[in-house]
Image (tube, rainbow, N blue to C red; front, side, top):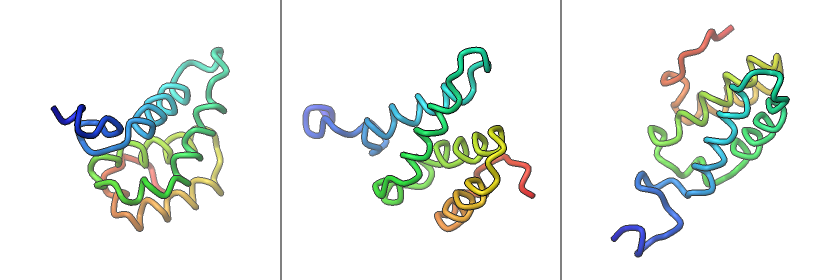
Length: 103
């Protein structure tokens, strides 16, 4: 019934495009290197982190996106990007939900 009333949202209130983009980013940044997909996944995380809708979603529903972006920045050794995203994640109160080695 919810699908008929609001087809653009998933069950947790997160827009489907954000959900699918987050799943793709996670997948692309975690597959073995020989797939050459990391950069595309990191690019998707960049799009997600810059999407203003993300800040309006319940933090518990999107913390996996925030944490995945930080992990990807760490894996890709992109410290400047990690610092910027870490500040954003901390502002949202999601940093405590991430299991990271924070320097």
